[in-house]
Image 1 (cartoon, rainbow, N blue to C red):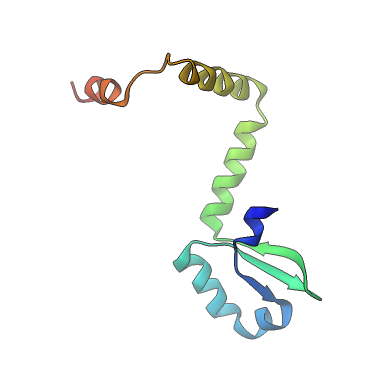
Image 2 (tube, rainbow, N blue to C red; image 1 turned 90 degrees about the vertical axis):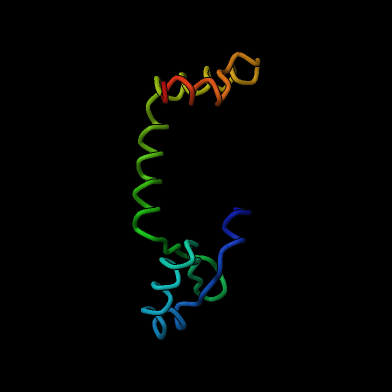
Amino acid sequence: MLDLLKNPFVGVHELRRSLTELLASIKAQGHDLVVTQNGKPVAVLMDVERYLEMQEAMREFSDPEYLASLFEARAEIEAGKGVPLEEVYHKTVA
């Protein structure tokens, strides 16, 4: 919820009046727009590319095997067993 509060808010009446400009702002500034009705958040408008990225992330995170491997990799990194970036980069360039 806290991240939601970092985004600009717009009421439904302002949204109706300024939809074209607000959509351009979402695309140009890369932020989401929280739509309010009677002062309460009711919807979020976001760039379609960001929406698709979020949908893909949700699909990946819903895969138990993917999530398990992600947690395992994170634990390895926290335990100091990760491969330094320089070594990874060196292997890809060579």
